[in-house]
Length: 179
Length: 141
Image 1 (tube, rainbow over the protein chains, first blue to last red):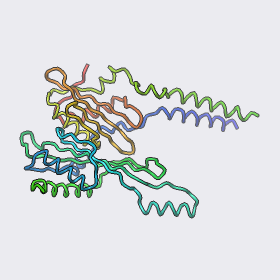
Image 2: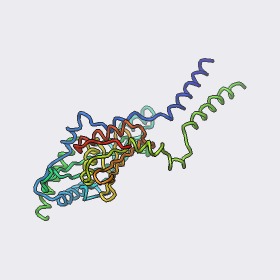
Image 3: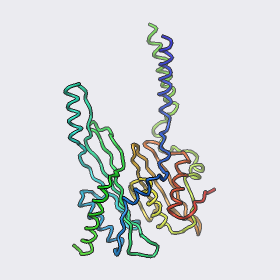
Image 4: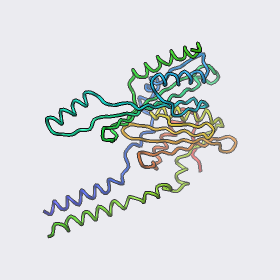
């Protein structure tokens, strides 16, 4: 009886203190070993083009991909865009249904997601005014069917970035041809 | 008969502990440590007057750190960005002139529902920014 009471106190005390603690994410502003690799994946260089042209071409690609533009600041070479889409995955839904049928357990599945992208152009050299590096970064928040956040993450799939830059190259060409 | 009292004591203890770390919600508008102390570790001076180039370096550094830019204003000299990695961290960086030959770069960060007041995070950010700027970051008085 005594031990269970002191255990109760201990649990209450731990929960009480835990409320004040901060999360250990202080390394969030440190460069890591894969920083350079990620930078290369997310960056392409474009030559013989003005910054306004590359930004216009980029906005075109983002629209092609269904993004809505949220913010832009051409003086800093920035375009910010986002889109909301479904996050439902057939396998996850099937698993949820099976769990409910056979074990009577209700589980929440991923429902919708908000994907954000920031595209930044930057002069590639000190003097050359016709070469720019374009870096693009994607992230997303996924919500479950009950409205809780399921995942918050950067999107790092190499294929995504390769596809994006393929489309941007085409768009730059179209921009140059005034199509 | 004894049972309710046994439950009541830990419940009161829990309330006491919980109220110890919780401020009234409207006070959150002005929550802050001493402004002087905050500014000292959130701010660095750089020996340049090119604020556009500095802002571009700030943006590149934020991208290196996996942040996605939220908004930027060249006139005001500000950039905000968010990092998602199982948590949500938001940074705002401002750049403004200091005297005739320097720029002040100030950063403030929040993690989820809390301001980050640990100097370590800011030191690491300025260390990353120095590399991108090719300039030393000077602590201010």
